[in-house]
Image 1 (cartoon, helix red, strand yellow):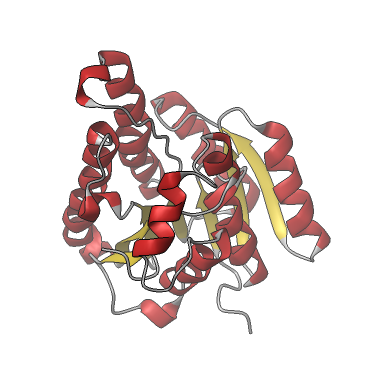
Image 2 (image 1 turned 135 degrees about the horizontal axis):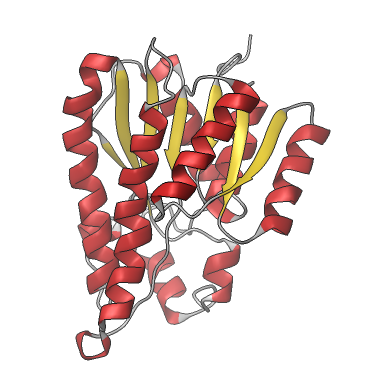
Length: 249
């Protein structure tokens, strides 16, 4: 039997990149998957089509995780389609780098609303529909909360908040048999890092130079860890922040 047979998983921000990789891997292990997206419907549909073509179960559901009404609708529709939730992956996230002189209110609220408030709202929504037998919440943090790169004040602050929330909720939700852990990736090659100009940049070369395993990550590298945290193989892990950056720290 597959590791996640008869499980229901919701992955926020799963239309591309790390989220898409996680959605495909969870589905391959037998989970019925909700591919959430905010605006990239075409990309989300492609992820679902690939899952279905490979024999899996998946649907797309639109919703901006920073808006409570959208989150409520997301989990109501998940319950109608698949039933109670067993796995939540809080993957939706944004980033914008800039020196301290360039920081403004708009950048602050944009990143905190998605990366922190969105995580909290999605967790709230999931809890109303979570399986009474418990399950797994997987937050996607970042190694930036450890390495604190120059020009990332706001983004690093949001990911530091994700670390703290992971620790708090692991204690808060443990009595409900819900485990809460975080995967903190290093640089990963995605559509987003290509669009931002990171791939092939000095930052990319420096990441490879300082990473003990000598390369940046691929979405599958993170997805394999998510499968582990979603499954019973990690049943005795909660409150952990797993650095997934090829050894960079």
